[in-house]
Image (tube, rainbow, N blue to C red):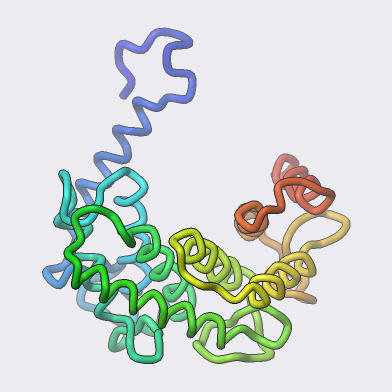
Amino acid sequence: GGEGRQDGEDPFRLTDVRGVVARSHQFLVTHQKQDGSFSVVRNVPSQSAPIAVTALATLSFLAAGHAPDRGEFGVVVGRAIRWLVGRCNDEGYFYYDDDTVSRMHGQGYALLALTQAYGMAGMKKEEQEAGRQAIVRAIDLIERTQGTVGGWYYDPEPSEMHEGSITVCMVQALRSARDAGFAVDGEVIRRAEGYLARSQDEETGRFHYAINDPKTSWALTAAALSTLNALGTYDGESVELGIQALRTSD
């Protein structure tokens, strides 16, 4: 791709990136199921993670400017949104029979997708209200399942267990919900922010899989820094140390 580009004309190769995104979305369109969902492995619910994958696919379309039921891929996005709303049970948990993979990661992704889509033009009034109610229930579930040390774990219940990547998903979803105008408990955010701060290795700047767990991850370090940024922590020793860790990764 990028034929005909002159030196310096497209230094970030945006033309190539747009081409990749367009082809990727065409691929996703052909893999959306009739019910509106997406999955990793079709017809194998225990391996397909439909909650998480549908939410992530939806976020990709939304990020490219495709609103529900409007534009080139509007029908695709609208069907996915309606599927997610329909999977939010009375307790506020996004659930699908035999999906044992998405769990609380999927909860965060689904809430993030719905809050990003909320209020977009194209959604019918009754569908927007159904989405609003699902979002409120989902926020409530996340808030009441925060663990004893401020993080979250794989199942939708408060626990002494905790894990960094799940906690990042919860915080990013709650931040998006607050940006969309929904009430979010500030104390929950404060405790989660404290959890992330205690997850950072003071010497290397990397973030641990969980507090007191020796395992660190480059991906989790990047995700944690992004989450702290979303919470308003744009600089300071913790951020600088984390960025330096990413710059020196091998």
